[in-house]
Image 1: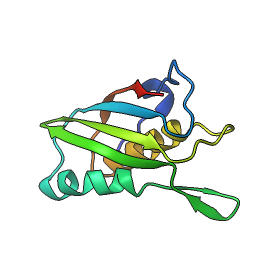
Image 2 (image 1 turned 60 degrees about the vertical axis):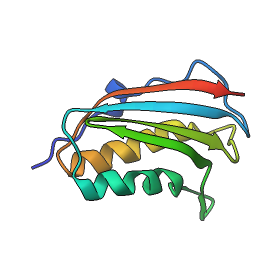
Image 3 (image 1 turned 135 degrees about the vertical axis):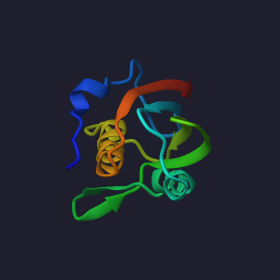
Image 4 (image 1 turned 90 degrees about the horizontal axis):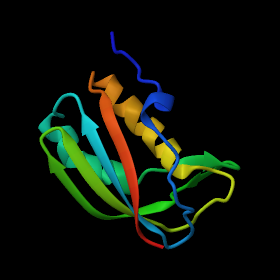
Length: 117
């Protein structure tokens, strides 16, 4: 049975205010390696990630760059549209936690830094 991680132990809100056009780098470390299929599809998962709002799927980011090294990855994402009431990065982090946990992989670190306002 999978152990489900608590987002409050992994995620902390960014120290910057994101807006439309902001570019951030997400650095994630995992406790185990992903299999080849998941490694190859992770960029697509991030690029096409969406959340529901008012009966619509909102895709707030576009993936600018992605790199994977053993048990970690970095993704540069650009906000296509920033919602003032929602922390989209936290929602993305939660969905990635759930995805990894399903495969018995656990996120050990989530870091987000501002690249461009």
